[in-house]
Structure formats: C-alpha cells, structure tokens
Image 1 (cartoon, rainbow, N blue to C red):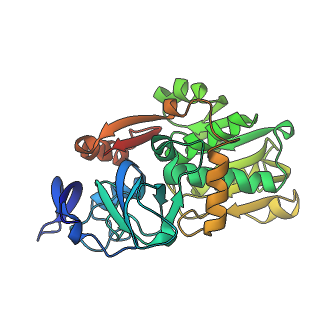
Image 2: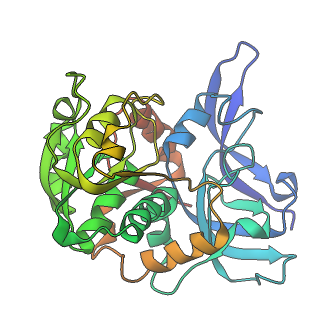
Image 3: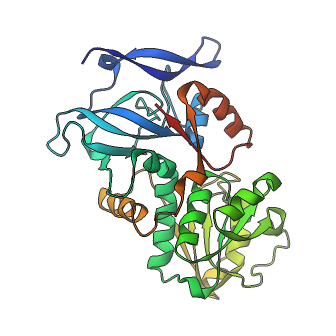
Length: 330
C-alpha cells in the first residue's frame, strides 16, 4: 500500500521552535507494525498538547504525529488475531508519544496494542471514551472492587472538567452514585450538572492549608486527576474505610500528607495506570464501558472537530480553557 494520507505533524526548527502543520505522509514511512489501521476517529488528550509544544518527556524525536488515541478499521494485518475490516481501538502504550499517532488517517502498530471494538460501542463512542474513559473506568473499577456502593455516600471527582474527570462523573452517575465535582471554572457548572454531578465545590474548598492531619469525614470515595494539596485534602476528608483512586498530576506530582487517614480511618489509596495495564484488564474495562457502565448519552460529553481544527484546540487545552472531551473525525 503506497498511497499517501493526511496527518498532523509537529516540526522542530533549528532554534528549538515547534510548528504544527497538516501534511501528506506516505504509508511506507510509518513504523513497522503488525497491523495497519485506517483511523476514523481520534481524541485529544493533554499528552497530545504537550507533544505539540516539543515536551521531550512525551516525545523525543521530531517531526512527529501525536495522538495517543485511535479507533478505526484494519486495512492490512500480519497478525492472526486481526483481519481486514475488523473494527478496533488503540489507546496508550507508545502511540502518539514516540510512535506516529492517531491524529492521522493511518497508523501502524503492534497487534498487542489493539483491542477489538466491543459490541455496544461505535468507533465514535470509543473515542469519546478513549484513554480518558479507559482511565476513568479503571478508577471506578478499583473503587467498586474495594466495596464502594452508591448507598455509602458521596464520591468526589477532582479535575472534573478534564477528560478523565468528565468520564468518571458520567460512569458514576450511570451507576447511581452521588457525585461531587471540584472545579474552578464557573462556565462549566451547567455542563457538569448535565452529565450527572449533584454537588459542586470550588478548588479553594479542597485546598486545606490548616496542616491538620484529618478533616471532617465527607467522601466515601475519591477519583483524583490533579495530585498535590487537593489530593491531600481529599484524603483527609475520606470516611472510615473509604478509598481513593489517583491517576494524574495536573496540579502537582508531590503529595504531602500523613499516614493518619490510612491507619486511623482504614483508608485505601489506589494508583491507576492506563498506559501499560494488562490486556485482560483493559478488555474487561472496555466491555463494561460498552454495556452496564455506558452513559445514557455519550454525545453530550464531547465535541467533534476536524483535523484542521486540532491546532487551535490544542492551544485551548494548554491554556486550561477546554472542558469535556474533544474527538477528531478523520
């Protein structure tokens, strides 16, 4: 297959400046992979925004095509696990980081990165979830497996207007949980209520500066995407036997706390990784996202743009002005 395809490309100049352009690439220039996929939809994530400004912690070599999410149809396969015309999902691993990513009409990837599209999800719906939905599902799964039930009380979601936060809220609301969202964006309040939030608290309210090791018990569960003192405050506010799932560091990678929430209230802290989680767990979560955990109306969680609109949307993400999910129709 020798024809060219359209892709977003990040180009590094001699003076370490980075520009974004929509270019034509050749399929022959893609990395060698077991499966060639014609991408129908991708989704924007903060890692894509970081890659687009040359963050070497995400992408080391340029020119590069970002996009850590992709959903599409198999165009060619050397793997017995996948055949031409199979509908598939690829998220995380190295896609879009140092491997040419989903913000392009084609990707070439190892078979071990691919999940078959589960019954109950369209390719578009799979990308409304994307890495963010998979991560949210892993968080919810950890809390429920620990024993979290709707009747036990409130569940707190930090970073509620980001992709993981948005999907976490939608999944929890579908399962009957009372969800409290943390946000500093007044313009997002109506959106958060629409997707299932029952109470909204400000960032300032979750930024305790008192140095007290424990606060009033409020939340039976926490899904945290921001880290730092907001996470520390949330941990101090868990009820007895409560649990928290953490998956991000938007505010800070540091966590200053004490052991007291854990040894006096029997709390549990789960670390969530969606990049390298085992395929068996990954497939299990996708099955749940396609069935019992599927929000009633996924389309209200995301807006759809074209590849040409991606650079401007990446700027909004970097400025902290985006909320909800953005999917890209290829």
